[in-house]
Image (cartoon, rainbow, N blue to C red; front, side):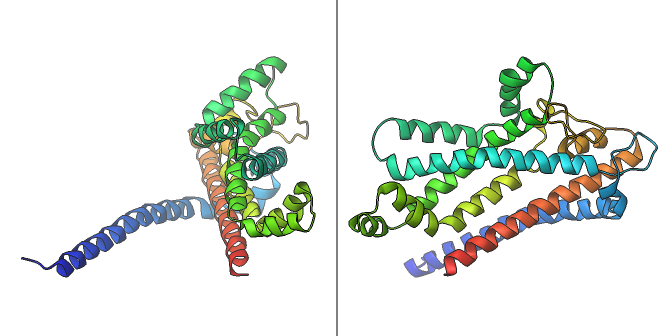
Length: 280
């Protein structure tokens, strides 16, 4: 008969081993994906990839228009979604302690966080694209903004709830209006966490394909017209990877590697900013 200490030690070692096994299982597939991307896409990286347009089959080309289209729509979606998310997060954390509006907002935000991105794309298609009768960069940006908003809301609310109430009470005791207290005290103390949430939201929308298929579609040529279809990396990767042409498939691998490296870089930057803020 094992003693109580021996049983606890056995259970602890079993849980530790199982945790290590599951971690190794997940890391194995992650490293496998990264290895496959580098193996298939690294040799396709070249200067022409960043300076030439997407080519027709059998021709040399690059992904310049797709890269710029993705950057433009990601930037526009972030600029649209970030202020809305921050203001909503401020309301939930600072004003939403009573009443029915805050719980309803949190419930809807949770639904948006877990909603498939294709549903968001169909929603924008129905309320915007079908009304104007054409795909556009504006529609793609709106779809990406709807993905950014719930991430920023959740991050902002959680960060503001970490601020001690003593800071708020000290500011109010000095006669500071609540809006100024929020702006100068609470937001300043958690700005690194909010920036981290915004960067993670950008990383999430960087590889979204489904909503852009119904909103921005694609464009083989360079365009700065936001009211017209615009090229973007996720849709180009989808179309080129499904094609029978080897040159298109190579560009698809290169584009997938670019998105992976961009998302990895954004996550590293976000974690670095948050870690530096917590160490101060």
